[in-house]
Image 1 (cartoon, one colour):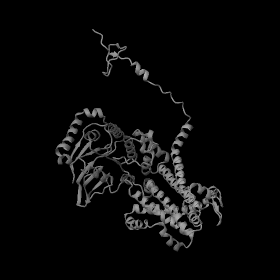
Image 2: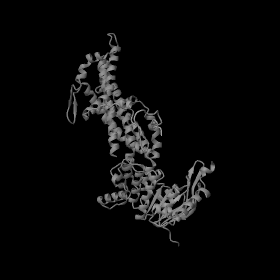
Image 3: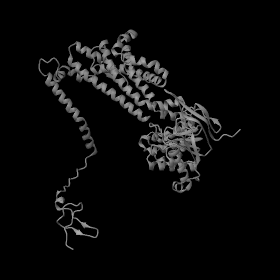
Length: 267
Length: 319
């Protein structure tokens, strides 16, 4: 029998019941991710990327198929699959530190109070947010909130880090700063990451592998491309590398030639 | 090269006086008349912070005070004639200054308790305190039961379908309509008044709490799922804090409604309380006393509302 990959999606089909009968969002998706690999999922709006990520998170139950993480069947949400949500989803009544602390308390059972506090502050330092530990999310800018969202996720020491368009709501410069944070974290922690994005450059810059999805309904994986850039990466070195341009061009051809945005096709 | 009049920088009319030509261009002097026009306002002497604070307070309060004064004058003007059917402010003072100036007659107030002389001549504050104690008991029960029921129907679709229609119908029943039922159940004035408060105040608490629970953003629920919070943790860490604003909207409406209901209940029931005081003064043709009682009721109702709103803000902030 073949050895399963670290994260294995096997024949994932997701159908949603609607008034007009069942709607098939994902059709028999197979995806294998190795430990420490950074995979970007890219595709047009409505192609079911979020549904796929939510299935791995356990927030959506696949109609058919199974997901295995480190050999174990995934069938419910859990802190071993931390999610960085697009809207950051920090709890506004808790301070930055308390938001991260909530996650640490759930995952670092058996550690002393001082150790947990230290771990919270360490993770806030990794995203350069330790200075705002006592602030509430309402007092922070969008980019700072998302930094805290990332800190909360990595503080859980997840087996796989799921990022659902983490920088979609940020302006271009803030987005670049956050991408640098993610590159830095990836260099230090070597997490297994599944990230959804709309941004070709973001996908190519951050990911070891770009998985391109066809347009929904019944979306499938259209192309799966390795980005052969060495890690750790650096933005300026990366964008000048021929591998970067190649991968970027491949993704753009996929998105704008083979599978054009359904919204623009109609127009 | 013939000397030309320097042009002003923005292409305006040439300036007649001065104007040195440098390598970079012409330096145009600032026009004399413009210098003359410039006025330098003397900088205001610094004001002590207490003074500026006091000014702000006066500016905030002054319109209210002026308006009340104007209304009193208008009222006096309308009802000042000797054959007016409604007493003027002056008559209110003449007829009821005893009630106004001695509100605590027959009342003993300690640190932790108060006692009101049984029967006889009790000041208006005594009646208000009696009413308030009834409201406090009835409202507290309504707050606890209402929040619990609200969370129940907010959380469980089954409970919502089962109970919501019932609540929607019952909440439209006017408080006074409950009085005969209440009297029939409890047989006594005190518990039936408390029940009346309870049954009046509970509906907005239930419905607003339920709405709060139902509208907890999916984002927070997803966070709870990913963190695998157990039901108790979810309740304390997510549901309660997320629902507090709605809850306090309901509690605020509830406290206002219970204050409305107590007066009505005491009017019918008699004995003690501010409602009884109104009814009693009306029956004794002491309309001026009624007017004083109205002012008291308004001020107490306003204070209750502010207290609940304040509590909501404090708790919302503490999270």
